[in-house]
Image (cartoon, rainbow, N blue to C red; front, side, top):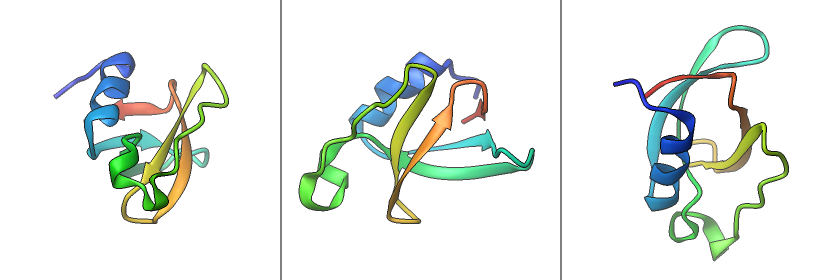
Amino acid sequence: MQVKFNELKKMLNRGPVTFIFEKKDGLPRQMTATTNVQWIPDNKEVVQKSEKALTVYDIEKKAFRSVSAEAFIVM
């Protein structure tokens, strides 16, 4: 299913979402992430540092990650 980046932001705010993006080395990576504080340890709030990238909490890696809007491939 193809989803626009802005739609992905809304979905991440509701809870975990699995999507694919292109890493800096050009390889695809699947990530399950969220921006919903209920899913983040200690209810830490996600701080967006850029309008060109989305900061998310990677559920599997248990760490914050940043994904460029241009790197986003598909859900």
